[in-house]
Image 1 (cartoon, rainbow, N blue to C red):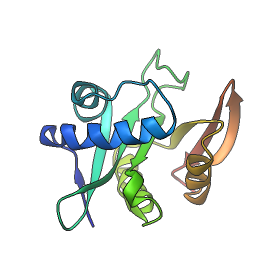
Image 2 (cartoon, one colour):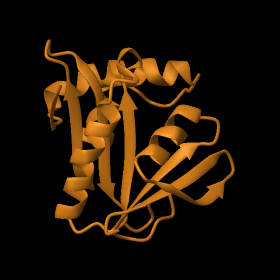
Image 3 (cartoon, rainbow, N blue to C red):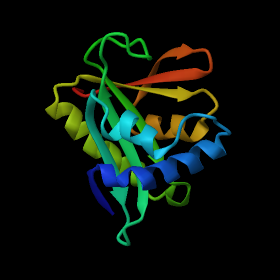
Image 4 (cartoon, one colour):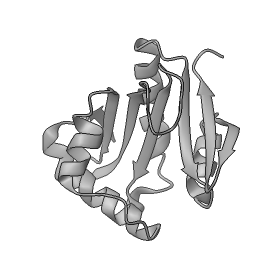
Length: 154
């Protein structure tokens, strides 16, 4: 498995992986390559967006880490990290998320981010378990969402 920063050329593969994941959630959220470019790869608040690639060049997943800015949709204090993880349906259970988070955690440290928020759908058992396994702790609940926090300095 190779972990590297996402580049514009990854948008189509990232979009396909995202679409498959969102379909399992029966979600109507945006998933187009244009959305992936603007929301992950080229986002102005991007700290890092990493992709996990298989030896055969297949995208296994990606993780986005952004810096919270004033007016962010998660109502976080400025400077927090905002993380999102998407592992291909075919790659779940293979340690992809763990390796992606190691890269994101290093990027957060390098960027001076002290806390990372993961806002997760309350019924997304897989994501809730994943973030708990990575050391995130629940710090607040919202309608239909659980907010987990990771403190970089432990």
